[in-house]
Length: 103
Image (cartoon, rainbow, N blue to C red; front, top):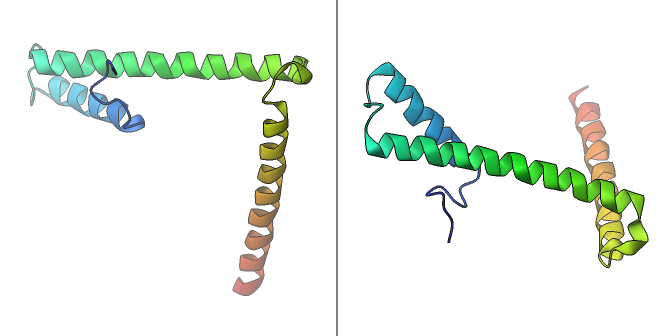
């Protein structure tokens, strides 16, 4: 089970934690209120978990790039990268089309 009451809400949890923290600092919500402390602690936990995830992603990318054939997901990743390149080309083409129509 998720330790963070904001689990699954993405950055919303961090934003709510920041909002509650701001309210506590402004005096609108008491900083010593257990609910405020809980939200602040969970926001901090979520931020740290996001930092950890980012570092693990970096490690995974480095490991894959060093030895791509060592990973059973290599073919899937190559297909995804190919699809990403095609989608990027489509975005660029549509941008150009929109710019042309504006003129």
